[in-house]
Length: 283
Ligand code: GUN
Image (tube, rainbow, N blue to C red; front, side, top):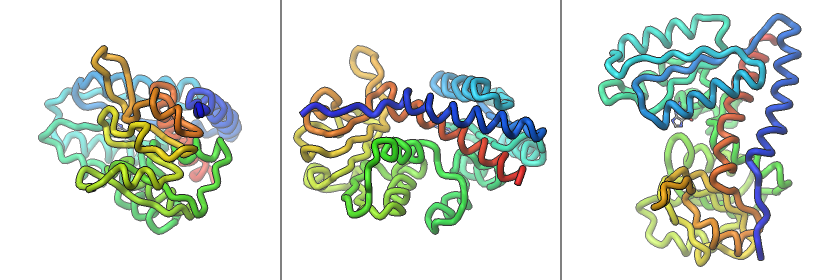
């Protein structure tokens, strides 16, 4: 069997067209959704990510502000910027790009963002809302994965989903979202004894470890759906995911490629969250 591709670029285009239309509608009521992105230091990967986020705002008609600060910025200065943006009525979403320099406590900065503007969904209030099924912003990467499953009409109820990775940004919220859709969820991680025994039982596998070839064809049940959150480089410097794509695509029924899979969906869901923040304000 050769798996069908879940095309993150195509799905993103479709979702961003809907975002653009809703942005236009809000603008006609005098509200332009606005996203503030703060980048501290000059991490090359972060620079690419923030540029793509700002470009996505432009493409969907949103207002964006990119603040670039030197790596020497103090924690107090950063907290003061977050506070100012919390009070800025032209800004509906605040994103502090991670990682931050070592002298800044990232969690403290995240907690300083108003939960009403926490479009990354990293605030403890957003995490609590997701856990309890209350309204709140969902972290963009797992939210994008859920949209990908929705796009293929996948019914999660009663299915076994295995999430590999337990980060606060992807693994844990991913597991909660799958659980909310009534999947049976297993979270695997670096301490898991027999990963293959777990993944072979899975109807859906989400690989979110940040390491190449974490999932190979022998670990996948025929017909499973495989979502690859990884962003790694292979020996030739080419972008690749956590999944051995060439092998696994012969076993799975659906699979996301890297690049062009989950990556573009993350930024798309950031646009959705920012738009919805502005819509909530508009009432
Ligand atoms: N660094 C890598 N991914 C992300 C993300 O989704 N949000 C933020 N703020 N930083 C990141």
